[in-house]
Image (cartoon, rainbow, N blue to C red):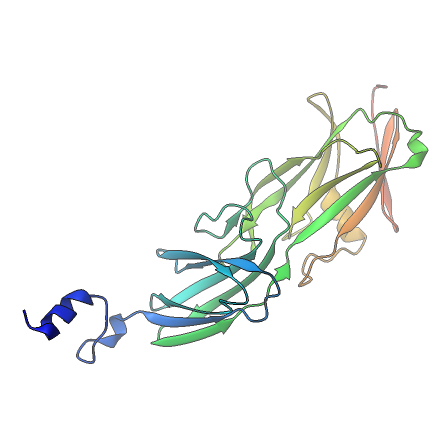
Length: 253
């Protein structure tokens, strides 16, 4: 077989000058030089096609990949092991809180032979610390606390994605603290439930309380937050610097 025919068989996906080049893939250059982390997971999708790579930085700071013509969502995630990479962005596993995740996302016009984009990553979680007030007198805390919300992950474009979020906070530690890692929110719908055994006694409108205190879920890098719980046998008070809210129990425990 002539050499030039053999080369044609070996390169079935290549585009020649004789072909309709609109059917050729786009060569996408992704600049990650602004990312200060040692590695990222890079996910790309156009809805029907997807690709994923784990990159070591800064060695692969300028990453080149062939993608379909049209529009492609590019999502960079650090740490690369964060959440579930389902092809639809990042999923928070059921029953877990949000991983401490940093995200960078771009939608790129790839209806051309060459395209480029650059990514910077931002903090997309709030570490909420609850402290048991010293006024509680060292009395054992008899309740379980759960936080529920309507964001279960992030879309391929990096936006909060609607879905069920529910996390049971660990017991207060020896320092009287417990924490939950919250994903970026779309609204003030977060709630905190107070349970005794399996019975829901009361709930706090956690998202509304955070909004009342000036918390900004739209900030590029989310701040952490802290609140204090003051427990008495018939009441539980949740407070921050500028506000507090108390729920009362109908029965003495």
